Length: 162
Image 1 (cartoon, rainbow, N blue to C red):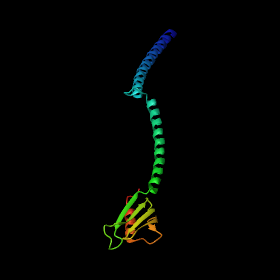
Image 2: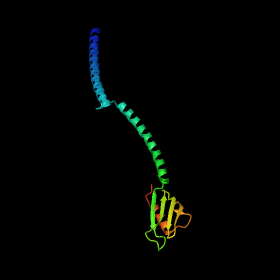
Image 3: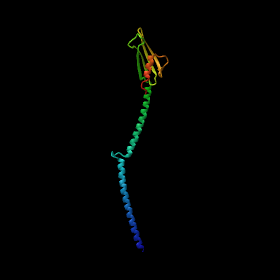
Image 4: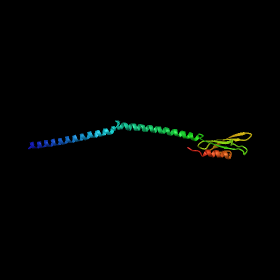
């Protein structure tokens, strides 16, 4: 009686062992497939691993950010310089008197982006030539301007602004 029970137990153990070995073989086959898929995903076409690509991308992103900060600082300095440089120059020629011809007198304006600069005026007459320099602050002068001088300042102020 005990002999039959032992034989049945051995058969059950053998069947369970066979099922376990089959399950292990199937799991191993799936593991090998997964490993091949992971390696192909990791290597891509170029042969570079995904980790290396991500590290290189992070390094390049950091470099681009530092370059961007440097360019932003440089742009700020250039904009400040552009605002203070005399970039709007206008010339208005005119006759100082009805006797004078050929528009020998002139008003020459040099202004920066904020409308500040200088106004150079030359008034030509038969006997002499006089030159005046006036300071212009934010589009206006502290002294009264001739109509031609005002025209030169207005033309300079209407120029391109940064």
